[in-house]
Length: 161
Image 1 (cartoon, one colour):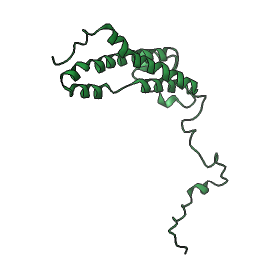
Image 2 (tube, rainbow, N blue to C red):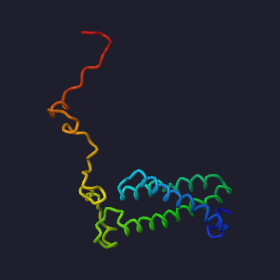
Image 3 (cartoon, helix red, strand yellow):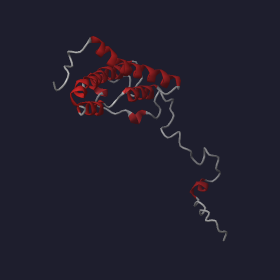
Image 4 (cartoon, one colour):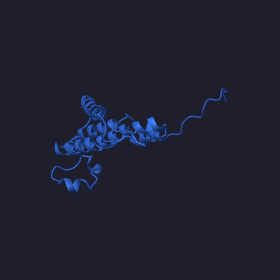
């Protein structure tokens, strides 16, 4: 037999394969909330944390002969759960206002638009600019911005001039 039947598995297989996807989403949402990340970042961290590359798992299992091909059902089911649960999670996150999309935009519109440029001044970011983590001459306490443009000293070669 070349592959196991995805619909002919014991019911436990379907529940067991769903656990890592759901646990990954819940745990990542919990810990990113605990870290007090902005809500859109919580959504991104949660999906990125729970997402697994099922293509690699499928390729490896198919290369292992008949027993490996029978195990190929796990990444197939897992990939289906990823599509289902991540889609519902993203939709729910949009519905409760945890995304960057404007509240007054309909779902159909936000699916085809990019709202990354709205981070500046967005309600979830408190108006903090995107590059607020960068150190500038003013924030570093320098009195003259030219202090940051000086050449680095020559490396020490062990011989004094």
